[in-house]
Image 1: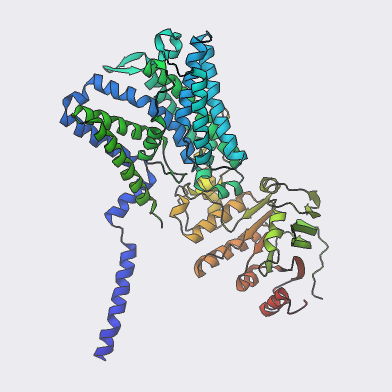
Image 2: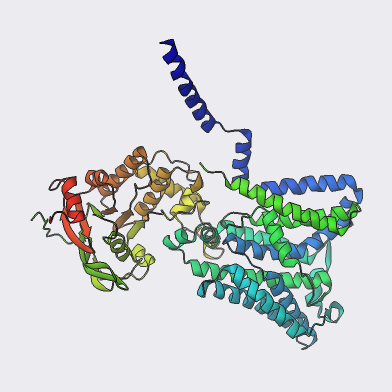
Length: 348
Length: 258
């Protein structure tokens, strides 16, 4: 009797243990649940911590002139990151936004200087160029059903070639341009910090995009298409139309970035911003937007761009060589993607 | 011999539908009638043409020949939206829900309500509050008590709850017909029973339901009539009273002619 009791009791207790184990919410799981719902939290924490650490290492880091410099360094990548976020939310990737931005800025600069067109016309031509790059990418992705990676890998080369063709490899200096093209580089003093109009345009873009993605049908459809394309189609969403519109909006954002870039560099160069595209993807990924689509937050991208800017600037002020900045950015990307994978494991 | 004759106009009627894929004949002249206030089950072996038939009725496929009538009117669905706009809602086996979006957002996915006035017409702002209220009301009306927080993302729900959301969405917008494709296939015993109850409540609301299922006990529990599909044709239409499950399976496999 006692023997049978002894042999039958372990299974029940281990069963109890098992159910307890299943129902137990460890603190880690709870943290993961919160991060899953609010993907911008982890980059926000990283940004705050890095500002505190770099500020402690070198007090000059927190000086208004340095903070102003960081915002200017971030403006181009932050803005380009919006275009990249839109595409990545649909489970795509855009390798051409950097080249498209340089093409737009070259069109703006050369239209005004080489062809002598008025500044506003040059700006509009740049905008049309940006939109056209989006339309081309969008049509290739939706009509020919090619993977976005392949399409934008191809258009990356095409846009770069067009840039060299139009510019003949020459840089257009800012002082020869109409004032409107370099306006984005002018500064405004806000709370003792010099803020450029380019930075203000970037912030405005984030406010608009945050509203559009979070509060309109179109925004929901972008998320739904990235989450599960077939499910979106079956619920009556016109998937191709949503995808095409995403690439066109990204094209418009690219043109805006081109304008900000001209103000930042005080000129338009065919060799500018070679690593802008990868930096934009880096900002999106560090910002918590999932490369698998359907998950992410536009503010996360701004945080991601700021984190990269703060790390590069902070490490430079700490007296470290540029190679360590690049190293740090690489580590950040891998850590960010690992965290994303871990967060995505949350399932009931 | 046991074919049921009806004199009423069917809500949804298909006449001699033919659909071929190259050399493969999916539908070989199928007819079907669905009457008001009934649950019509469609059963059949794999490859019998159940799914093709449903796809033709819901606009996912265009039949090569034959006609479809809704309330006696001839209709030509070219895409799922056409059928949906005509009042035919489908719950697909895959459920067609977006895991990251919440319950209310999923119920209104593709037909979001906008805010009144300037916010809605110019800024195109969605009316999250009203959509949540209505989603909640719809779930309550269908007696889905386990799901009261409509702001929860779908991925945090169990399989049965997800199914309930998909069925509630169909019930909310399916003014004429609701089609359910294998709604209990992925569910446990208790969750299956909840979905079967849901189907009965839908019928009691007056919405006719087409149910595709492999599960004979489920079919015999909720169906008023059973359409047996075999080799791209309708082998018979029976009722749970006129035939046993064994006989139904025999007709399905061709072992018995009605």
